[in-house]
Structures are given as structure tokens and as C-alpha cells.
Image 1 (cartoon, rainbow, N blue to C red):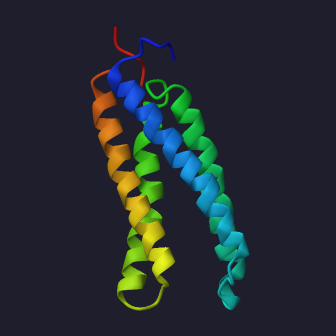
Image 2 (image 1 turned 90 degrees about the horizontal axis):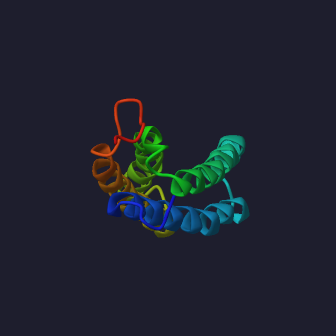
Length: 131
């Protein structure tokens, strides 16, 4: 992406870079927590998939207009943790640090939606840049 990229693409780029950096710091910490015993495999599989998505965020950040079709999936990725984390915390079934992580994910989901909406006018239905 050139330095003269539209403001929407620059906004999306920074949102996805910030999300990836945050994720590369926060997600590996899951490997050092005491995972629930009957569901350890699922817990660590979730952490692995979440870690992979941080790489996806970096790919999107390199060219948000080109990868605009993937932005709705990234919103879902953030909602799939943010909503349950806060719901479980609300019911007293998750610690406060998980609720905080869920709140950050919901904030990032909102920023992903803003980035997606800003980019929608710059791409066609296939995600290709309009001239």
C-alpha cells in the first residue's frame, strides 16, 4: 500500500496492526494458565486458532482494500470470544481478566466494523478496488 493510500485504508491498516500486536501479547498467555481439566484440548486449540488469526490480521493490514472481503470474518472472530467471556463473567463463571479480554475484543470488533464500513465504498462485491 502506498503512502498516498486513502484514509479509510490507513485507518484499517492501523486497526489491524494494533489488534495483531495486542493478540500476539495476550493470546500466548493462555498457554500459561490452568486450563479447565476436562476441556484442556479445546482450550489450547482455541488459543492456537486465536494465535493464527493474529497473523491473518497482519496480512489484512498489509493491504486492507485487497482483503476487505475477510473483514466480516474478523468481526466474528472477535465476537466469538468477547460475548461469551463477558457472559460467563457476568454469571460468575469466569475471572475478571477474561472479562477484560472479552471487552477488548468487543472494542476491536467495533473498530473492525468501522474499518469495514469505511472500506466498503472503495471495493466492489468481489473486494476489488474501484477506480
